[in-house]
Length: 217
Image (cartoon, rainbow, N blue to C red):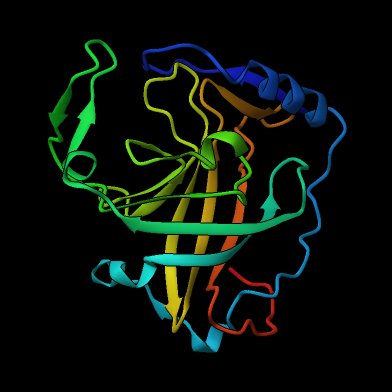
């Protein structure tokens, strides 16, 4: 049996995940790991090259995106949609906004060179679709070398998906994603350990013909 626990998260702002947490609690009582649906956007393993952060410009544009849940409690086995990424302006790339004063300050380290949106993220869908360049649904953070989908740093129980890019091919890329449930976490009542959550994702540029594939992360 899987139980829901709460952990402290030091962010400032209103709470917004209570409904999602209750839904996860209800699902966790009766679930088994989902069977992933084979995606059609993932390039064969033999064609993949390790992702190099110097290739960030290759991520600019519009992509068909599929995310496949293969670990953790039951959610939709897969979800597909559109991913858009473009270069960030100077303010958003090098600065963060204070949750106390609302003022922008220079980041101590790292930057956010890309921003965009998607309608294919698991958590949370509405925030991941934001097209506000100063509060985007998706952004790339060089500190994590990953895409954040649906992150809201000023929200107390902020939940988001972290998409770690691991490989690229001409016209596409992919890797593993991990959901962050904010102040909540799922605990296995038998082992007392946190239940791993996540899966893999693949993106294919929309002007490139998709190819059949074998599902693999």
